[in-house]
Length: 264
Image (cartoon, rainbow, N blue to C red; front, side, top):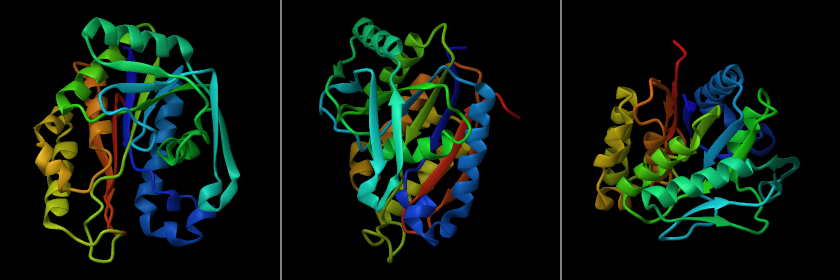
């Protein structure tokens, strides 16, 4: 099986104790779920972890895969410069994804140059690297293209992963407008989006992510839907069982953790 596990995770920097300084206790269910999926990934022992982040610089009409040999980053801008990362890229898989995209006629570029890892990458790695140390990464940014194209891009990742042991991590928060005291207040569109998203994730049939219209998404103040949709394409046709492990909205932002693997 080319993709042996896939995980939807949020990326609030406050979840890290050195940044949250006690406020992270509000989302303890999310923290517990992060440890759960990190242990699952340890059992899989992947060669590579493909991470899709909404916060990496993007191109509107082309998927970006970050190239080079490695990248670094830290939580300095969040007041925790002591937490840093140096990650090696899987250059073979990067080339394979580029080739698969060409074959499937999907716009994709390998983006050269040194770009620091963003928090959409580092928050998942903060937990995963406590349990998994050897895996290389591939870092991907999504586009403004339709959801169906994101799904097909996920299928390209699956095709390129043949013969490898690859885990997909779709980083993204859900709606940011779930509570009056949240970062953007409360909106009916955000609440409706959250309810529909949780329904889809709970069902385990993530192909339902394609049913969200552009108008619905634009009113939802979400950041992760395209990440999640890429993941859904990457696991298309694979025998992976989906489970919604936790969902919290106590900060006014939706944080969902969902696993797709073979573990019962």
